[in-house]
Length: 137
Image (cartoon, rainbow, N blue to C red; front, side, top):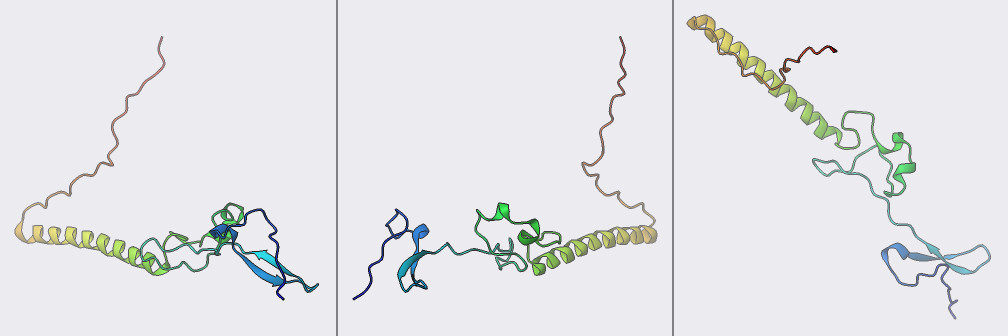
């Protein structure tokens, strides 16, 4: 005859948070062992690949973990995988390089035709002039 098992907690329904398995104790009894939910790894924001070097954990465990276990010491560490980050860096470099080449071409053309090159458009980074205020009574 099979040994009957009694629940250790009050919740009797088979919900996601109440999974249990049967374990034999050293005394030979069968008891329920409550199983925790599976821990997840963060995924890359771009290609959705699992990130390496990060400890799998439940969201409730993360505040108690040290930063070393939750991230990778690199730009975008814990957010992007190494491949996507490398792509981003190379793309930014090539775009910047294209801008430099464009300016050089314009200067080269100006030399050959004798016209002054067009100045690049100004960005919104120019600071507004501030008023010099002093305390006067």
